[in-house]
Image (cartoon, rainbow, N blue to C red; front, side):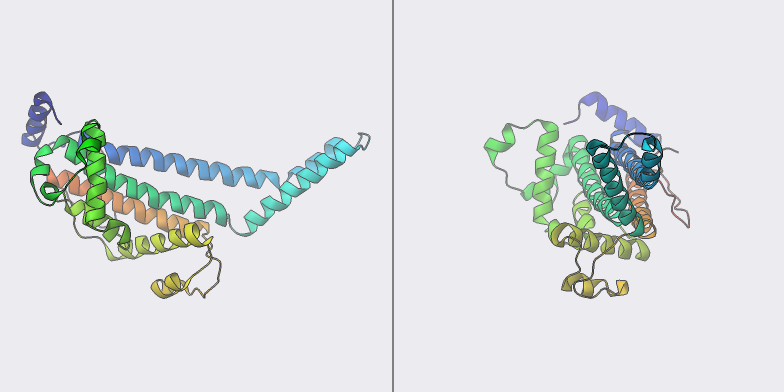
Amino acid sequence: MNNPEESVAERQAQRRGGVPPWSLKAAKEFLEHFEVMDEVLHLCVCGIGVLTGMPGMAVALTKDTAETEETKKQLARVESLCRLAQREISSNFAILHGQASISSWNDLESLVKDIVSDWLCNRPETLHQLPWINFKVRVGDYESLDVEQRAAYLVELADQNVAGPLKQGVNRFEKLLETIGLSGSVADDVRQTLFELQQVRNVIVDSRGIADQKICRSCRWLNLKLGDHVLIDHVTHARYRGAVCEYATELVYRIREAFGDVVTRPSSSPKEPPLHK
């Protein structure tokens, strides 16, 4: 998995109290993608806002133009877009924030799996420990894969082994992280918010955003009734985003500690993972 030179470099980094670059690669990629998604969300919000002024501009531009069937169609199209934009604005961009929240949860799932996969690639001795040593693979499938693909294959096996897809909230991630010794404690507020995010994500994906009995019972603090539309506004999405970032930050701290880096957690977690000292 690792070549001898990389292993030597890693040991030297550990002696210096450093952290090998590969261990933070997934977190850096997560942060970059997270920032891009925020930018795209902002662009969409701004673009929809601009649409509300289009009908007036269109009328002004065509005031001295002979009215034709084509101009009528264009004006009707602009007015239709304006109504759609106003509807989204009136809902506080619920559709956009809902999709962004789904992406936040999915990004967190990918981050955790990538961390475990990178761990297997670069610390192959892990495979000689429980639970990895007991996994059975389909030899034909496994032998045809390269190093990274084999690690990803094993991570999916481990995820199924710990019943990850059935776990709730941060347990969805902690059980998988436990297989490489990176599980730990999570602040209560982050734990509850991520649990809520998962339930909301499931309702949007599986039930078109219509509240079912499960979310009504499990997230009583949302005061939802059966059949209510679960709408995500800017404030709620920001709360979800903050919890995702705080959890990602916690994972970076754990990785640093695993390599002997002395970490003092601040009383309030930063908004972005501390990738660099």
